[in-house]
Image (tube, rainbow, N blue to C red; front, side, top):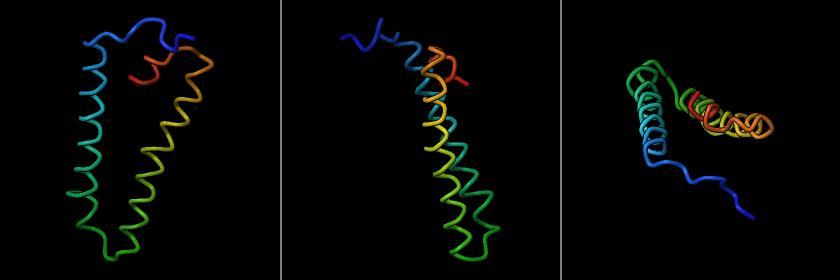
Amino acid sequence: MRLLKQPPSPFRLSLYTFGHFCFEYVANYLLIAVIDPHLTSNTQLIQVLIVYIICDYGLRLFTGETADPAQKKPLFCSI
């Protein structure tokens, strides 16, 4: 059973990797430089981190489950 019909091109893989790096960098910058100075307790920090983790990892699962029946994985991943 072949999992991939065609191997991903190095350019597309590099583009996805760079896009993911930029997105994660901006998200972490917002957490550290913008949101953190406004938090007044450790409880707020934990709540912000939980929301971040749910959005970062939970939305990936939702996107993957949505993209599987549509067979549009590269389009969904790039969005």
